[in-house]
Amino acid sequence: MKHRILSMLTALALCLSLLPGTARAAEGDAGPVTITDNDGQSVTLAAGKYYVINTGVGESGVTEQDNLPTDKAYLTYESGTLTVFGNGTVYIEGTMALSGDLKVARDPTAQNNAYLTLTRTGDSGPALSLNGHTLTLEKVIFFQVVSSDQPAVDGGTIRFAVQSRNNIGIQSANANAVSGDLAVENAGRVNISGVSPMFRGLDVKECDEVWISSYNDTELSSIIDKITIDRPISLKVFGKYDSDAGAPIKTEGLMMPDHTVWTDGGALASSGTHFIRDSVTTPTAYRAGEGWALYTPGDNDTPAKLTLDGASYNWTINIQQADSVQLELKGENEVKNLTANDMTLTGNGSFEGELLTGGFTNNSTGTLSAVVGVKVPDAAFYSNTVYGKYDTSDIGDFYVREHSPLTIAEGAVLTVDTKSKLILSDGPANLTNNGTIINNGVVEIHTTQSIADADISAFIKGLKLTGSGTVTVEKMVSGSGPVTETYTHSGLKLLEPPGTDGKLDLSSTDTADDSHWDTQGYKWEVTKGEDDNGDPVITNATLTLAPGFNATEVKLPDTAVTIVTQGESTIETLSPSNNPPRRRCDHRGHGGELD
Image (cartoon, rainbow, N blue to C red; front, top):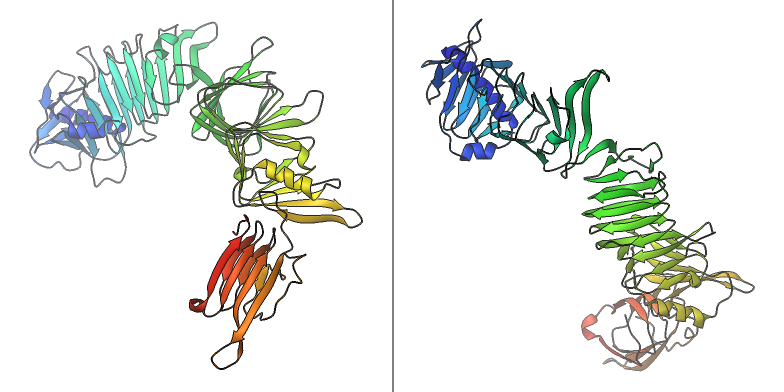
């Protein structure tokens, strides 16, 4: 009898290690643990004892002894922790009852995890009586509770200490599998079989799959409605055998927390474009990063529906199954490109990416940060609009053409990344800015015909660009072909930079020079005197800058220098010569800016 009690304790330990609730088991009320063999003889586990699992023919339960067993599987118990010693699969014949939370731990010296089965024959009660407590399993791969004519388990929690691919099995041949409310946590798969009603309620947390077999059920929704989950899981529910079909009735797919069950479409294509075609005829769930893309097919009278729930996908989703699609947003979603014939946006979530459609209606109360391309009727091109905050960092260069015009919506912000360009291929006429453009890269304008500098400047100024980038204009000049010019965000055309690398070195220039005024926009004036030795020196100097002066560096002599700006000028670095302590630099201008 002691031997049978030990076997039951081992099985219980394995079960607890597979189920969630380790922390609760360690911290909760430990309480006594009782193992009862098939003859009705009970053993209450105590600290300092050894419980050998009885495995002989006709034996059950566990046997208590004071000395350390040799060559036998056994259990020990102390302070709410049941430790299993031994290798391989452990079978405990009998029942186990908890009066507090219990943690089942594996022998710390064992190299392999344990398999544990608790089996009860007869009608004296559940094989495992949790009594509302938590059984936590550590280093247990498989935990199974089997009963013949009684429920296998009553109400409580079975959990693995950590999330794992380990399995839990609960089976009753002629009774409901669970007599109360059961919670399971951190399992790879949970298998439950028995007679309806299977359980009063099943709470599933951090598990991957749930398989349920109901030997006499024909209405499977009554089972599904009793299951609560914290995240989508793979679900299979088998009911009564259908002799006409030659198989049990069943429901299987991906179950969502709202109790809907979807066909499992797997993950979206790993690259390129994921097409949703006419072959999709049932509601189908696709994994999109850490989130979901849930598609309900449409027909001639009803639009299809695509729900994005926390979806992340760096490729294209192309919906070809329906002419009209309702796009519902939940949570935060990021999809590089979503294409559909006609699209209506709903929901309160957010979307970041590109939408390409034949028609667009925004009924969403959430946040849209996207470029929306709407096909122009009777044409083969799209008109694009930026909504919300959109950054080009994910797409690279952004082209605006006659056949793909761009509008920045009111309140929207388009940011040109430092490594990107906003390229106006067919001139300025195809860009309308009703919002804000932050240019940290390059706005590149190509003109196909001769345009006056004043008109180009007015257009650039009208864009109200901000940021740290530049504007380049490639324009046609009669008789000489294309010429590239650089402008500031305010529309000022920058002059030719000095030197070959934009550096102007005046540190040793002791004579006046105005020869570069018309081309590079600067002139240099000096006043000379004598030093203490009577040698000629520059006593002060004046550097006058025309509007559009543009240099990467200006190096000044070791003397007092006045810089006069007549308009907006750009100097990236202003450097003194070798003796900065003696240098004095004054700046005065006429309403211009010196950057």
